[in-house]
Image (cartoon, rainbow, N blue to C red; front, side):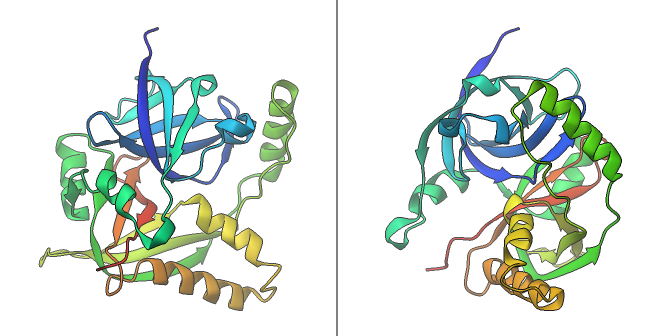
Length: 258
């Protein structure tokens, strides 16, 4: 099998999910530095990586990858996890987002309405979009079969590094928004699958044991980072392999406005 070696700015890390086929994996996406296109990297066994391979968002990584045989979305790539090396982290020191913007904003910016049209006509499955009138919601979700999850982890621990099952969050989170500069936009409601959001729910429970207050704090934080009056807000969006018309917010790019 022929591998391509790519350098990628990682912009998205979804919450880990166990599977019998791939183990516990994280779906990541980012910008291919060779052509400024969004690509999807899967599966990445993030918690099984060596410490020097565990990249943060907005790290530039180098990795060997190849087109998958079981995922025909044009942006999807399988990765050789052993080949992952972290080259640099683009931080926002001294209050500047320039390093990140110089890469991310070379990606074509679309509306969500356009992404839906291109998903139908061109099988597009990733996009960088510009929203406005953003609001935040949550709803209770039905948890997976706990016995099945436990059995999956028991199987994984026979072959991989020992690790505790990662907690499944009993809530779904959503952004509602309209497309910027699209007068006829009907509005959109997309679930948010960003790792940081669910990790915040887990960590902040100690600080805010009352769930109502906890959810208010989470809403406040995610509305703050998507405040289009103060920030130049973009959403990374992507669809599901099995349900091509179902798109989600994978992450937010939110440099401050000048």
